[in-house]
Image (tube, rainbow, N blue to C red):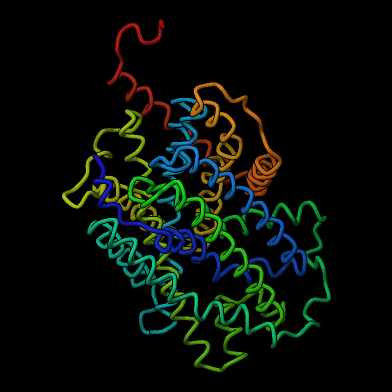
Length: 441
């Protein structure tokens, strides 16, 4: 059982911090360099994808009002479509969470190594990556309140330097840097599709406040408000931050930059500005790791309570934390880090694959949930309401499908294989809970 209602520890500030902290992670810090080859088109796609993210956020907000349920996308998919689709979404969403941890932790390790060059080396980078993952796991094992407080501190602390760059930097930009709309040479549709997963990876986490619903105070109001507020803050930072960095750093340099925000801050305020942004990146990475670690125990816990995941994921510690689920998930993330470290090509190629894989497995739940609210409202009302799909939901669904298309063949192939591998688990779980006569009714 979850913690008593009176012990619910996540309010508006904590839930908003979880949303912003999960969205404004390593993807925010590295994105200007990743999208630089596409020139002004990248800014347009940030705005378009931001509008799509807001539509998805409004859909999740409506779902949270109708039925605030632990598990977020999994819970709404199961309520709308049934057990098996719900199980697939829980499986894929769970994969997307622990597959993203190495990506975020590697960004953290890179910044620390830039601070202390004597730590440079594959072995040290691996140790730093694993250390920060398990440090955040220990924080989450202390309880949801500790994880929520940690999210508030790290998120609101990093917003000061990032916000300063995004807002004050507008007075420093060189407008000659925006002469080319699409310098990539690719056709407009192809270039837009290539930008979709790069921007969507940064927007992952927009649904974060819906997942720990059982620990949220006044969930029917808090979750929708924190979701919309968190997405609005993140979209504003992404759009303005990209404009500022592209306006300060020439594209030829920006394409090869490993620290675009730090470089922009150095050009405005010298070494002190560069140091402040680097420290903000450390906080940003730790905050994102913390938020995703909180969620990666909640999703399998919700599915296990419904008999769709193995029972061990539903076990709560003395601090009312799904400790087993968190530890198992972190162990899988650790295996990914070790695979990265052992790879002959180093971190970079597998890093790109994990970004695509994490985005692909997260976007599928978004597509399911984009059209789920009409079915959920019909179920909640006992069938008295006729299911209707709104324009906002159609935009969110289109946004998810376009992003899936942009992920490319390799991540979609690996993601599909991982989803299909879940079928034996589902059959095994159903066999454990099978009651003769169930399928004949």
